[in-house]
Image 1 (cartoon, one colour):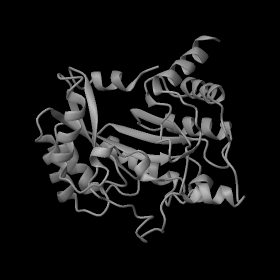
Image 2 (cartoon, rainbow, N blue to C red):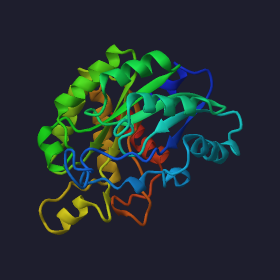
Image 3 (cartoon, rainbow, N blue to C red):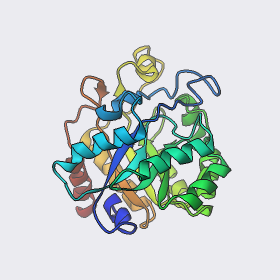
Length: 292
């Protein structure tokens, strides 16, 4: 099983750390272009680091704050600027996005850029600019699922076909592609999650980032479940580790798995409250993979 560190080692000589950047972007299914309210599970504050939570500091200032946090323990670390919050390529011109990337790369120690966005928010001219004018860039698309019925239920606002198109265009431009996928979305069986892995296998994807569905206070999904409109599958850590082991076996062996789980702040998290660190959960998956 390849890790994200293995992937980065192909491109950089030393250890790399992602530093999140918040440029104050929004999403087309929040501002009325596609819809209102955003994805039903989403609460951006649950995964945005404190140093960039407001999105009001400059890119440079946010990166310097992030470096200060990590440099105390890892003084020789090099960095990737991770444009993470909301849809980074939405709401600005390609030229403006390119300049933000260049600003990030001008910070000492920052060697590359990762851009998180939606598959329906990547114009071709921006792809071509990024590929030809930056030293290293990766695009991470929030796909979440390959099942259009699920994407509609969670108010995602795009189809799997848009993901396929974005991935293929990005690969053709010469840019490595990552996909963000969520396991345990409402209505999905384990076989449906495995079917998504099969569909990912047919795409030129370098990295997959999984995490378990997290039910968060204040989200539309939490309200829907409280009203009895639907429910979600509630994995135990052991059951989710078994699913992840099945996913590892199902994915192409050259696809890097960046992670299996994420952890939102305790005061926001309704489910799951497993109390496990990422490395502890990964150990459960490895045990599943080696026990059979």
